[in-house]
Length: 159
Image 1 (cartoon, rainbow, N blue to C red):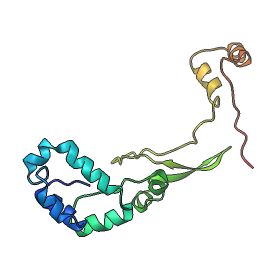
Image 2: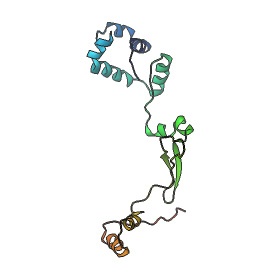
Image 3: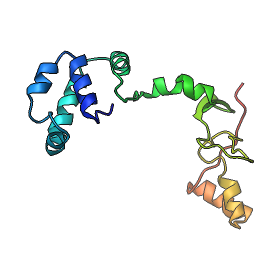
Image 4: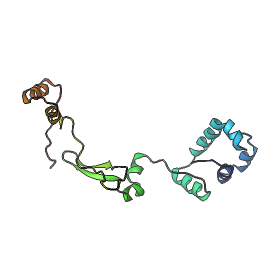
């Protein structure tokens, strides 16, 4: 929520039934006073905000034309209608873990849209490939694996 203008502040305190307290508190009466008492003013608002649910605040703030946006927990975020509509949350198959819900690519490109093309690797799944790419010989890679410096993981499809 952003209480920015005098009208926002007045509307907020009126909507919560504390218009008289707002009018009498010298820390809240003008933008200059609120700026001098910034921490106290917003601490007061934070305390008030704890008294209602997000749904109650959304209804109240929307009805009173006060700028706001909900802060979602992870469960609400994953199921957010907007993110679903823009295909931001994607179900991606994983060979050992089953389907995973992942966040998509947050940007949009004009020609070549990035996309998720493979599953997240298990620990050690690409170790051998990485060592080969850096020029390690097969016997050196086997030595690193057998000594425990790294490990290898071969994906077996989940049944």
